[in-house]
Amino acid sequence: MEKTTTVPIRYSVYVISLAGFFVSLALSIWASEGYWVPVVFALLAAVGTYDLLQKKHTVSRIYPILANVRYFLESIGPEIRQYFIQSDTEERPFSREQRAIVYQRAKNVLDKRPFGSQHDMYETGYEWINHSLTPSRLADSDFRILIGKHCRKPYSASVFNISAMSFGSLSANAILSLNTGARLGNFYHDTGEGSISRYHRQPGGDLVWEIGSGYFGCRHKDGSFNEEMFRDNAALDQVKMIEVKLSQGAKPGHGGILPGAKVTTEIAEARGVAPGEDCVSPARHSAFSTPVELLEFVDHLRELSGGKPVGFKLAIGHPWEWFGIVKAMLETGRKPDFIVVDGGEGGTGAAPLEFINRLGMPMTEALLLVHNTLVGTNLRESIAIGAAGKITSAFNIARTLALGADWCNAARGYMFALGCIQSLNCHTGRCPSGVATQDPRRGNKLDVQDKSQRVYHFHKNTLDALQNLLEASGIQHPSELGPEHIVRRVSRDEARSYMDLFPFLEPGALLDGETGLGIYDKYWEEASPDTFDAPTFILKLRETKLR
Image (cartoon, rainbow, N blue to C red; front, side, top):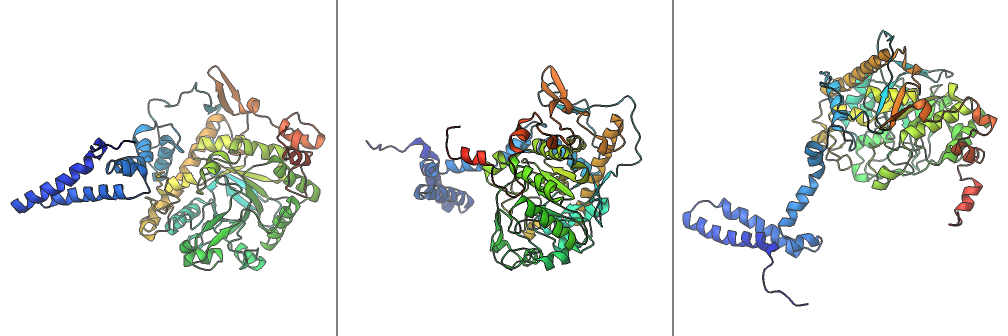
């Protein structure tokens, strides 16, 4: 290849920087002033020289100095799109409209909108709730659901609570603010897998203690389950329920590790590990390995806790695994007091892109599967269902309850209430709002007194809005919401209620035989209470591509 002897035009900024340095330096010496000018040129020339000599970034070697402009613009691309390009209703992952309503309700300021909806009501996917010509009148918005009605210590929960977020993922002041707000509003705060920290306990708000595969707060040194530690923590009056985490929507089937460098004394204290050592959450539990063993573990936790409600949280994956759990309930008579369905759209846990985008069943389909299976096996009346997945408004709550849930949880909604600006830096420790960080220089800037009030007001004003929706619909309580109340547009000229859009099983239908619905008829009979393994016909399919 023939070499060129001319300087490419792409080097022009670098050449100008070099020339500018020497010329400005000479002029500054001559004039005895303006020395800042050669300093600027020297810095640019230094950047260009480094770009040419380094070997990591080819673009920088080919475009010295100029490439850094590209990298800078690329780095602020999400902010530019969020603040200046995206419409108010474009969800990436939450729209400006969704965030704004949380901020306004959290600040307890006017949350009304003028001049009509910004949504295209004829766009496919648009949803609404039907109103009544005879509205109801409700006394207040403190809607509650009794969980564990057959337990010695049942819990009356709000229909809108704080979903699982651990201390370690969130800052100390964020945890303090969330729990203080929960105490003020009389709703629960899920601890997340990181267990009960001093910052959960200090305000005194209701807790749901989440126990994951790392058994933090109730583990032996080898990571196995520790009954004595569990009994001590479960006995706390603040702990109202215990939730076994099977999987989470953000990264189902994926374990995690908190590097030892991030395991502070406070985190180690909460999790029952040594400071400075890697904190590992395995991808699967060691306390059980079959559906029957899972239910035995749930029963054992209920006994150790003194009769508090115990359930589990899961993101739905293979349907036969869920069906195996339900079959185990029928075979053994053992049942959880509640099940929390975590939708695949969950996102407070940082995870690989493929996990966030393409793994796990979204909340709507997952909730329908869980609700229908329990109805079809006559178990629904004895097991309460919670659901989580991008819930930030009263309508989100209403549509979720209409699909079969008894209550809703939210994580990112309450993060917005704390001041989260959706900078998408949760996994870096550089959260600009002091929420998702362990850097005390950032976390300590979050004012607990102010933010706890915002958490309280977000909950209160959202439930007030739910009350208004229920009254307009002629309903007395959220438990009356059903698929007949919510309507979805399926084309420009057709809309269907959830009752007509989604399949709903009749009570006992799965016990009676075929349902006429593929997922149930195909997998229910093949599922086993004794194993999470795939059915035989699936295993055979995996042996060949001839399907």
